Image 1 (tube, one colour):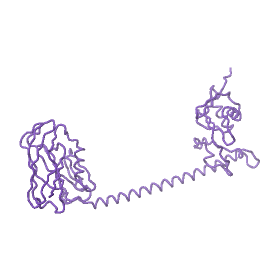
Image 2 (cartoon, helix red, strand yellow):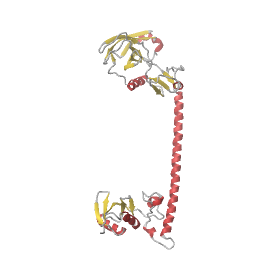
Image 3 (cartoon, one colour):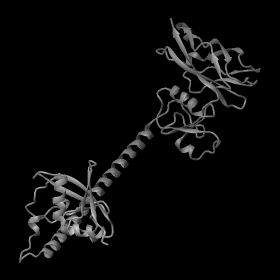
Length: 361
């Protein structure tokens, strides 16, 4: 018993209809017209869903029919598209090739009706072969042009990157970190890239020494390409990145502005008493030190805690600034000083505290 074959036509908008299998491509067009009528400016586009190939004429229809020969249902996607104007000359590549027929073995030419007519001087097979040769040449030329364009683009980008890197290296070599000394070669005012240890209270290396120094492998060295306008930015970055256990070991201070009279600038030594409170969850052991960090604009003394400080307890300390006249500028009346607590193993804990040292009338 012969199996009745049908075609399921489906549109991209979700419409669907089943029709008896047509005998040829023209009948497929006629039956589709009853399902999806179009005007003279439009045409049908049939897509064989099994192989995702377009059906444009009888030859394609026969290939599709053969592929579904043993199946009851043939599935075809139907799109309605604008008619393309017929070219005066041989069709361009985009009109000749189906979008998924780019390999040579499966070239499927879309010959327009006015080119399909057989003539004595130009048989259809010869015409197709001529078009294939033209397309091959066009494709080869197109491939060469694309390769050349990509090559030029990559070469240009490489050149730009080299120039950018050279400029960056030149600028880095010219940068000077004022007041920062290399702990190995003792270069004053490190020039170029600077490396700072986040564990040691004051340890810096220049670019050359960093590669040849066996610093503690458990310590973190950060790379500073250009001098920071405010060392405060670096210090607070250090505090965030190291993730100090502030919930266990932390402290607070009662004042953060140390105000002195303007005439105090003439003194050699200035001092101010502050109160520290243990606001962490653990006691501070004896031997902890409240240190003035080396990046401070105005250096103060370090204060050693000689006793254990339990949670919630306070301790009064005196911050002393000496050699005032040698470390201040007449036109500057405000300085930043940074302190942090260190345990007996020289490990920092708690937040960095910024003190504003202000001279005013």
